[in-house]
Amino acid sequence: MIEEQIKKANIDAIKNKDAVARAFYSVLMNKILLETISKREKGKVIGDEDIAGILQKMIKELNDEKENYRKAGNEQEVKNIERQIDLAMVYLPKQMTREEIRVEISKLSDKSIPNVMKHFKMNFSGRVDMRLVQETLKEFV
Image (tube, rainbow, N blue to C red; front, side, top):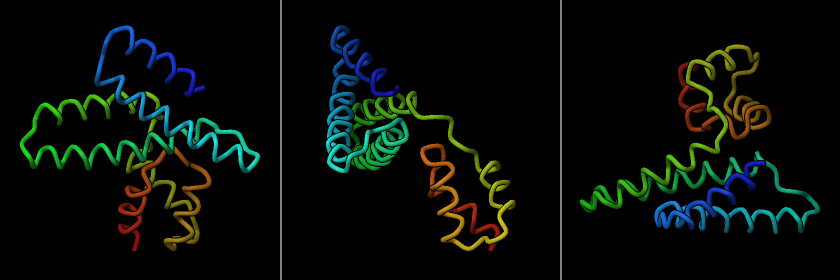
């Protein structure tokens, strides 16, 4: 399970005194804990798909943060955030490429936006960037 790998990596970061990795894993583990509590209240258990979703949200947040530091001219923080993004990418399943998304959309009989988005959310959750799906879908309209 991804959660166990993250906990082990966090321990390694502590042992190696790696402040950047430690900060990343600390935030990630807190988000996983919050999601675990939320799921438990609903009688569910957190799974790898949920953790992949958390990681994807974190990557989006980190990319936004990176752009703000870049605008401010703080290149050291940009490098730190890029490293954190690399750490997050390790735990994500292989993401679908634009071509794979295009092929999957072409297989659908109903290419309406709600139908396509629902199809990808149900069948490829955690393995596809929904923004990329939306951009690729525009090619079919």
